[in-house]
Length: 219
Image 1: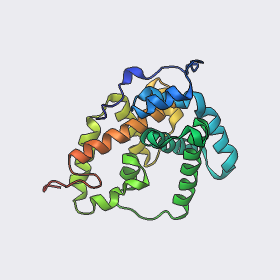
Image 2: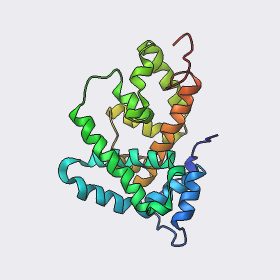
Image 3: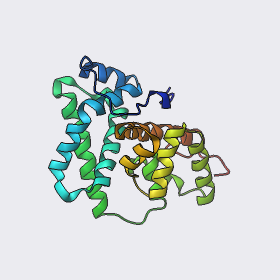
Image 4: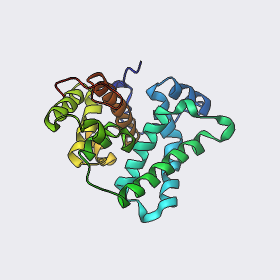
Protein backbone atom coordinates (compact mmCIF):
# COMPACT_ATOMS: atom_id res chain seq x y z
CA UNK A 1 0.00 0.00 0.00
CA UNK A 2 1.41 3.35 -1.00
CA UNK A 3 2.04 5.55 2.00
CA UNK A 4 3.10 8.82 0.35
CA UNK A 5 6.38 10.66 0.40
CA UNK A 6 7.07 12.68 3.50
CA UNK A 7 8.24 16.26 3.08
CA UNK A 8 11.20 15.51 5.31
CA UNK A 9 12.98 13.49 2.63
CA UNK A 10 13.02 16.42 0.22
CA UNK A 11 16.42 18.17 0.00
CA UNK A 12 16.57 21.95 0.22
CA UNK A 13 19.52 22.29 -2.13
CA UNK A 14 20.83 20.44 -5.14
CA UNK A 15 22.86 17.61 -3.63
CA UNK A 16 25.73 15.82 -5.37
CA UNK A 17 24.62 12.28 -6.14
CA UNK A 18 26.39 9.73 -4.00
CA UNK A 19 28.98 8.04 -6.24
CA UNK A 20 28.32 4.63 -4.70
CA UNK A 21 24.61 4.62 -5.53
CA UNK A 22 24.34 2.49 -8.66
CA UNK A 23 21.45 2.03 -11.05
CA UNK A 24 20.58 -1.33 -9.53
CA UNK A 25 19.99 0.31 -6.14
CA UNK A 26 17.93 3.09 -7.75
CA UNK A 27 15.78 0.50 -9.51
CA UNK A 28 15.36 -1.45 -6.26
CA UNK A 29 14.14 1.69 -4.47
CA UNK A 30 11.80 2.60 -7.32
CA UNK A 31 10.31 -0.87 -7.38
CA UNK A 32 9.71 -0.65 -3.64
CA UNK A 33 7.89 2.66 -4.18
CA UNK A 34 10.56 4.44 -2.13
CA UNK A 35 10.67 8.15 -2.99
CA UNK A 36 14.45 8.16 -2.68
CA UNK A 37 14.61 6.06 -5.84
CA UNK A 38 12.89 8.71 -7.94
CA UNK A 39 14.98 11.45 -6.34
CA UNK A 40 18.21 9.57 -7.12
CA UNK A 41 17.06 8.77 -10.65
CA UNK A 42 16.52 12.47 -11.34
CA UNK A 43 19.76 13.50 -9.65
CA UNK A 44 21.84 10.98 -11.56
CA UNK A 45 20.15 10.93 -14.96
CA UNK A 46 17.62 13.78 -15.04
CA UNK A 47 20.04 16.48 -16.22
CA UNK A 48 21.29 14.56 -19.23
CA UNK A 49 17.83 13.29 -20.05
CA UNK A 50 16.47 16.84 -19.99
CA UNK A 51 19.32 18.06 -22.20
CA UNK A 52 18.67 15.17 -24.58
CA UNK A 53 14.99 16.06 -24.77
CA UNK A 54 15.80 19.68 -25.59
CA UNK A 55 18.26 18.54 -28.28
CA UNK A 56 15.70 16.13 -29.74
CA UNK A 57 12.78 18.57 -29.88
CA UNK A 58 14.59 21.90 -30.11
CA UNK A 59 12.23 24.86 -30.01
CA UNK A 60 9.19 22.61 -30.53
CA UNK A 61 8.82 22.41 -26.73
CA UNK A 62 9.08 25.48 -24.51
CA UNK A 63 10.49 25.49 -20.97
CA UNK A 64 7.12 24.81 -19.34
CA UNK A 65 6.50 21.91 -21.70
CA UNK A 66 9.95 20.50 -20.92
CA UNK A 67 8.99 20.67 -17.23
CA UNK A 68 5.68 19.01 -18.07
CA UNK A 69 7.48 16.21 -19.93
CA UNK A 70 9.87 15.71 -17.00
CA UNK A 71 6.92 15.46 -14.62
CA UNK A 72 5.06 12.98 -16.82
CA UNK A 73 8.19 10.86 -17.31
CA UNK A 74 8.91 10.92 -13.56
CA UNK A 75 5.37 9.76 -12.84
CA UNK A 76 5.69 6.94 -15.37
CA UNK A 77 9.08 5.87 -14.03
CA UNK A 78 7.62 5.77 -10.53
CA UNK A 79 4.57 3.83 -11.69
CA UNK A 80 6.24 1.36 -14.08
CA UNK A 81 9.62 0.66 -12.49
CA UNK A 82 8.75 -3.04 -12.24
CA UNK A 83 8.84 -3.20 -16.05
CA UNK A 84 12.47 -2.04 -16.27
CA UNK A 85 14.75 -4.74 -17.72
CA UNK A 86 18.50 -4.02 -17.48
CA UNK A 87 19.15 -6.53 -20.27
CA UNK A 88 17.33 -4.25 -22.70
CA UNK A 89 19.26 -1.07 -21.93
CA UNK A 90 20.61 1.25 -19.27
CA UNK A 91 18.45 2.99 -16.71
CA UNK A 92 19.30 6.36 -18.30
CA UNK A 93 18.16 5.13 -21.72
CA UNK A 94 14.96 3.69 -20.21
CA UNK A 95 14.16 6.98 -18.51
CA UNK A 96 14.87 8.93 -21.70
CA UNK A 97 12.40 6.70 -23.57
CA UNK A 98 9.76 7.71 -21.00
CA UNK A 99 10.77 11.35 -21.43
CA UNK A 100 10.75 11.29 -25.22
CA UNK A 101 7.34 9.59 -25.18
CA UNK A 102 6.05 12.36 -22.91
CA UNK A 103 7.43 14.99 -25.29
CA UNK A 104 5.73 13.39 -28.29
CA UNK A 105 2.51 13.16 -26.29
CA UNK A 106 2.65 16.89 -25.54
CA UNK A 107 3.02 17.67 -29.23
CA UNK A 108 0.07 15.40 -30.09
CA UNK A 109 -2.02 17.01 -27.36
CA UNK A 110 -1.23 20.45 -28.76
CA UNK A 111 -2.28 19.43 -32.27
CA UNK A 112 -5.54 17.82 -31.26
CA UNK A 113 -6.41 19.99 -28.28
CA UNK A 114 -10.13 20.09 -27.87
CA UNK A 115 -12.75 21.11 -25.37
CA UNK A 116 -12.83 18.76 -22.41
CA UNK A 117 -14.92 18.78 -19.29
CA UNK A 118 -12.08 19.54 -16.84
CA UNK A 119 -8.68 19.30 -18.57
CA UNK A 120 -6.88 20.90 -15.62
CA UNK A 121 -8.10 18.28 -13.15
CA UNK A 122 -7.52 15.47 -15.65
CA UNK A 123 -3.90 16.53 -15.99
CA UNK A 124 -3.30 16.98 -12.28
CA UNK A 125 -4.80 13.61 -11.36
CA UNK A 126 -2.56 11.68 -13.68
CA UNK A 127 -2.26 12.83 -17.26
CA UNK A 128 -4.34 12.10 -20.35
CA UNK A 129 -4.61 8.38 -19.65
CA UNK A 130 -6.61 9.09 -16.51
CA UNK A 131 -9.71 9.86 -18.62
CA UNK A 132 -11.15 11.92 -15.83
CA UNK A 133 -13.60 13.70 -18.13
CA UNK A 134 -15.36 10.41 -18.87
CA UNK A 135 -15.33 9.41 -15.22
CA UNK A 136 -16.87 12.69 -14.14
CA UNK A 137 -19.52 12.70 -16.85
CA UNK A 138 -22.05 11.00 -14.59
CA UNK A 139 -21.65 13.40 -11.69
CA UNK A 140 -22.40 17.06 -11.18
CA UNK A 141 -19.38 19.35 -11.67
CA UNK A 142 -19.93 20.99 -8.29
CA UNK A 143 -19.95 17.70 -6.39
CA UNK A 144 -16.95 16.38 -8.28
CA UNK A 145 -14.93 19.56 -7.72
CA UNK A 146 -15.79 19.46 -4.03
CA UNK A 147 -14.52 15.88 -3.81
CA UNK A 148 -11.29 16.78 -5.65
CA UNK A 149 -10.54 19.74 -3.41
CA UNK A 150 -11.34 17.69 -0.30
CA UNK A 151 -8.80 15.10 -1.45
CA UNK A 152 -6.22 17.77 -2.24
CA UNK A 153 -6.60 19.09 1.30
CA UNK A 154 -5.52 15.68 2.63
CA UNK A 155 -2.17 15.74 0.81
CA UNK A 156 1.09 16.63 2.62
CA UNK A 157 1.85 20.35 2.54
CA UNK A 158 4.36 20.43 -0.31
CA UNK A 159 2.44 17.96 -2.46
CA UNK A 160 -0.68 20.06 -1.92
CA UNK A 161 1.18 23.23 -2.89
CA UNK A 162 2.32 21.70 -6.19
CA UNK A 163 -1.14 20.40 -7.10
CA UNK A 164 -2.77 23.73 -6.23
CA UNK A 165 -0.18 25.61 -8.30
CA UNK A 166 -0.93 23.33 -11.27
CA UNK A 167 -4.65 23.97 -10.89
CA UNK A 168 -4.12 27.74 -10.76
CA UNK A 169 -1.98 27.58 -13.89
CA UNK A 170 -4.44 25.30 -15.69
CA UNK A 171 -1.39 23.25 -16.71
CA UNK A 172 1.95 22.19 -15.26
CA UNK A 173 3.19 25.07 -13.10
CA UNK A 174 6.74 26.34 -13.54
CA UNK A 175 9.08 24.00 -11.64
CA UNK A 176 11.75 26.62 -11.03
CA UNK A 177 9.28 29.02 -9.40
CA UNK A 178 7.77 26.24 -7.32
CA UNK A 179 11.21 25.10 -6.18
CA UNK A 180 12.00 28.63 -5.05
CA UNK A 181 8.73 29.14 -3.20
CA UNK A 182 8.95 25.73 -1.50
CA UNK A 183 12.68 26.12 -0.77
CA UNK A 184 13.51 22.88 -2.50
CA UNK A 185 14.95 21.75 -5.84
CA UNK A 186 13.41 21.38 -9.28
CA UNK A 187 13.97 17.62 -9.08
CA UNK A 188 12.09 17.57 -5.78
CA UNK A 189 9.17 19.35 -7.45
CA UNK A 190 9.00 16.55 -10.04
CA UNK A 191 9.00 13.98 -7.22
CA UNK A 192 6.35 15.89 -5.29
CA UNK A 193 4.13 16.15 -8.36
CA UNK A 194 4.44 12.45 -9.19
CA UNK A 195 3.70 11.28 -5.67
CA UNK A 196 0.89 13.81 -5.28
CA UNK A 197 -0.79 12.53 -8.45
CA UNK A 198 -0.59 8.96 -7.23
CA UNK A 199 -1.94 9.90 -3.81
CA UNK A 200 -4.73 12.00 -5.30
CA UNK A 201 -5.86 9.19 -7.60
CA UNK A 202 -5.90 6.84 -4.60
CA UNK A 203 -7.96 9.26 -2.52
CA UNK A 204 -10.40 9.86 -5.38
CA UNK A 205 -10.72 6.11 -5.93
CA UNK A 206 -11.63 5.66 -2.28
CA UNK A 207 -14.37 8.26 -2.78
CA UNK A 208 -15.57 6.53 -5.96
CA UNK A 209 -14.33 9.30 -8.24
CA UNK A 210 -11.55 7.62 -10.25
CA UNK A 211 -11.47 5.24 -13.25
CA UNK A 212 -13.00 1.88 -12.41
CA UNK A 213 -14.42 3.00 -9.08
CA UNK A 214 -18.07 2.91 -8.11
CA UNK A 215 -19.23 6.45 -7.49
CA UNK A 216 -21.21 7.19 -4.33
CA UNK A 217 -24.85 8.07 -4.93
CA UNK A 218 -24.34 11.72 -3.98
CA UNK A 219 -21.77 12.12 -6.79
